[in-house]
Image 1 (spheres, one colour):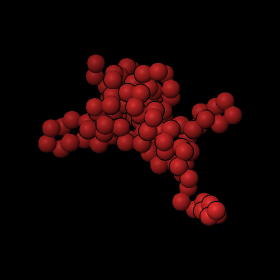
Image 2 (image 1 turned 30 degrees about the vertical axis):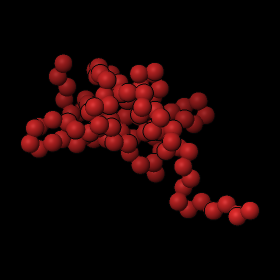
Image 3 (image 1 turned 60 degrees about the vertical axis):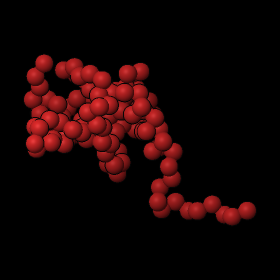
Image 4 (image 1 turned 90 degrees about the vertical axis):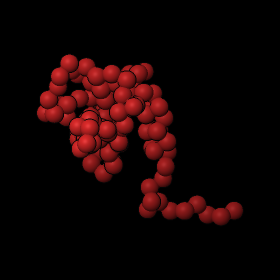
Length: 102
């Protein structure tokens, strides 16, 4: 299958389990080999039963070794990406107050 960059940048990214991760927004190409080495993904954040993009949310970098397959509608990635995303969501923002020492 061949795919244009224009079409690639609209692909939904899902895990093997079917969890929606986000949408491909850019790619990183190795200049020597002419191969895609990373997919830049705008993550989705669940919000009252909807999946929406969050402007302040940093993009995810997904390495080509984490890609399981690609169709004309989605990029299917390893379930390990889900674990990374869940860890990121658990982190507190840098400007959050520190807990009081006991």
